Amino acid sequence: MKIEQIYTGCLAQGAYYIESNGEAVVIDPLREVQPYIERAERNGAAIKYVFETHFHADFVSGHLDLSKKTGAPIVYGPNAKPEFNAHIARDGEEFKIGNVTLKALHTPGHTMESTCYLLKDENGKDVALFSGDTLFIGDVGRPDLAQKVVADLTQDKLAGYLFDSLRNKLMPLANDIVVYPAHGAGSACGKNMSKETTDTLGHQKETNYALRANMTREEFIKEVTTGLAAPPAYFPLNVMLNIKGYESIDKVLERGQHALSPEAFEAAANETGALILDTRDPQIFSKGFVPNSINIGIDGQFAPWVGAMIPDIRQEILLVTDDGREEEVITRLARVGYDNTIGYLKSGLSAWEKAGKEIDQIKSVTPGELANIMKNETVNILDVRKKSEYVSEHIIDAENTPLDFINDSMVQVDKNKTYYVHCAGGYRSMIFSSIMRARGYDNLIDVKGGFKALKESGNFRISEYVCPSTLL
Image (cartoon, rainbow, N blue to C red; front, side):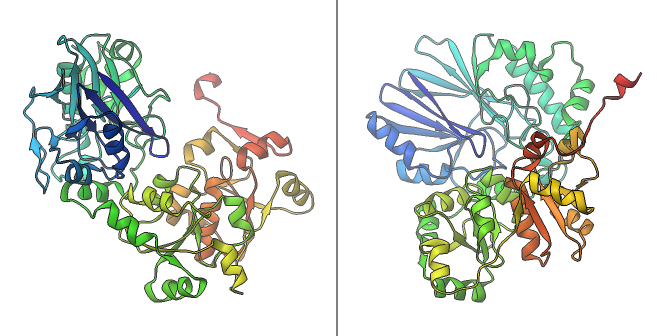
């Protein structure tokens, strides 16, 4: 028996490949499915089933393409109503894979169709739990997402279902079972996930706040629903793609990998209204970019920020990337449902400059340079981190304009004033500044290195959060 966790950091997502005696299954596959197929072929195994723990909100699953290419049926738990052929498992139904067995455990709460899969080894011993978004390491799935899709559900009602699922289905299982969740720290599908991506169920019973043995239903509902940040706007859209179906990833890649000359790129931008997305490093972007581009660097939390900043997943997109990374960018866009990349700038910005096209820039300063400026004048500083980060500690007199809520934050910005913009390390501030510049805000200056560099420079007064209890 082989169990492999295939973890994708930018989505904080875990897919799983399980193999026994020439048969394999994949649980919660990503959009690009060829790696799973090749993995099975290398091992001389056939993919027998594609299991889904629920209709995902934070990414588009690869279930349809994987099923089509392998002939393996798609399996969902009870209550699932996909608009394509799938096997809807009964609670407790078992599936043989070589010499091992997967048992479906219906665990509604995160969503109503949420289902965990319990793996039994060759001897019938329970060895692993693939818990989807029902149980994370250090947390449980947030119960407020399904209400965005099903009108008569409330987060309190879903939290009550989740309480029952955990107590009746998962907590009675043996302590030595290994938990393999669908997400880890960084995912918006929970609020308190550990950086660890596996653990024993016994240790989770001891340490996970939501599994306290003496917790009442009312306490559970209150604790699970308190402190939930608003989910990204693209979540319900991804859910519907996972329910209704979507275009093959092969077609998405073919359409997106259309190399365009500077002239053709400019014409496409003008004629289609496509968004120009530049995925290069923020500091490289700042030195020169196609006017009206927005920067979301590929080497950061790319997919979630695309989902947060581009409200329409049907938006046509033109790409400026580092040479050779076009397919990677198109794939990572497709993971969160952005399938309408229509081409990329061949040879990147260097080709644009050689063609004599106009470029734009965003000025950047170091913390030392900003400190010298502040000796002679009063400056306006925008901190685009999340409110919780700002409250924890911030530069005194800095104004909090979170990137997460840029449409609200921009109301606080005066086009006629100059602002110095920072985040934690420089990634989010360039997203903010590029979007604002595309909207006509020309007086934003980026602070290199963000809050970390500002604090380490020792040139700025820091306001730190003081817990009220310490004042007593």
